[in-house]
Image (cartoon, rainbow, N blue to C red; front, side, top):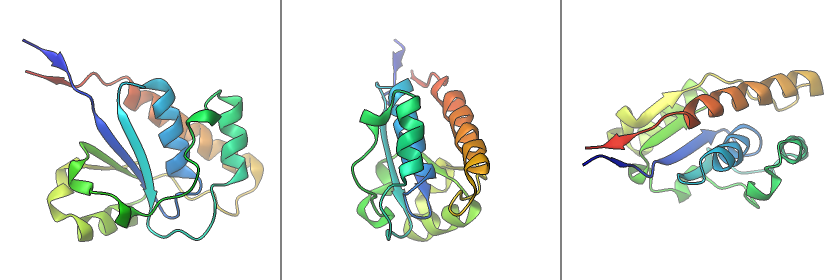
Length: 142
């Protein structure tokens, strides 16, 4: 008998300020049946206001986490899929969890920190497109 899997996904970026919390909230909206989380390599800033504004427009602000979280707070081995925003994030994840190698994908999305609003919006739209593609997956167990 075939059944649907409740996929457990972790998004990782540098500070859990822009990219990963945005991706987390968008995927939570599209796939409420999945377990979705995010984390950063280092935590020094709150989640960006620009992310909150974008998620408000997407009717997903209520799905945004309250504060950034560090990668060290996560049990990486428990995730089915880990999305690293850049190759450096993958390298860091592998130092913490070498056995996670086959669970990691890299999206190559640049950090919007210090970008102007127009370029930042392009990054946000790029993340939304990738999240929408990911949400269309139908993982199954046999």
